[in-house]
Image (cartoon, rainbow, N blue to C red; front, side, top):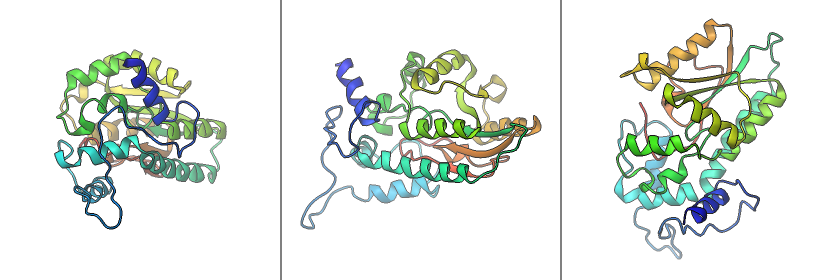
Length: 259
């Protein structure tokens, strides 16, 4: 079963070769179709509007995915649309990066979040209701410590092209400092071989919001002489606050909300 789960997710996330139009069997989770024919009513279709509200930061402060949207979110994450949405963001980021003339001091950096940006925790969330279940830090941290999260292919492709352009990469994650070793190893295993800095959340930020933490760490980068030319994350808290960079890019994620 574990081998089947890995192979299925590898195909879904594009780790193995295959057409983007390949049919996804959804055997990992019993999902019913969310589209009808001949104008038939499809229950729960308003979940698309809920996802739009989440991605535009109009639906805020939510704790779990609505129960009636579990199958919709599952179909979205395991289907083609999530990957297509991710590709649009990554392509726009690349077009922007290619338009820049980098400074000769080699201080231009691109900030990446890790979870649901550089790495995907879909193998975990597929077994925990795609965000319908309340967040369980014990179970999630156990998954993180396994160091098996695959890369989100669109982000990995962007990462490689940024390096080829001469842009340095900084990973800024909400993962706690004690997960540094497993996170670094997971990143390398997933294809992210080098970076300028890997910043994890220290104990001094305990009880602080993600906006406060990430703003503070970005300010430290700026005070060290770095220029943030791009900033990418799956949460609005990755992109709001201070010292956000010249441009920000929001990756799709309707599974959870971090303030």
